[in-house]
Image 1 (cartoon, helix red, strand yellow):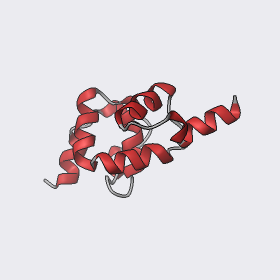
Image 2: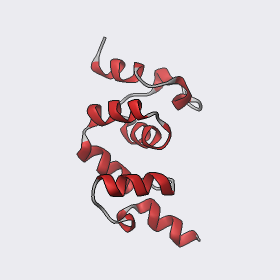
Image 3: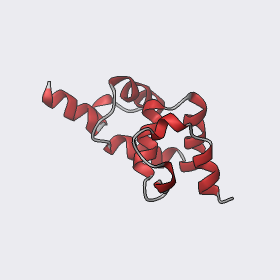
Length: 97
């Protein structure tokens, strides 16, 4: 079993409600997986994803994400010691408000 497959096997089926789990590639679909897990995953899935991708890649992905919940932005702004305004999703949400 590859490291990619081992990682995917640790994620719950509900995270893949709208996609075919077998078609997800952890490298090609890294942004999708990181955002999906950080928004909707369990604390264990978040830790597993953090270990798999590393803090720098997660930070980069979340800062560039076009859409995140206010809760996710607040949590990771605190986690990475950032201002909420640094998140693209925060900027976009305020632009539409």
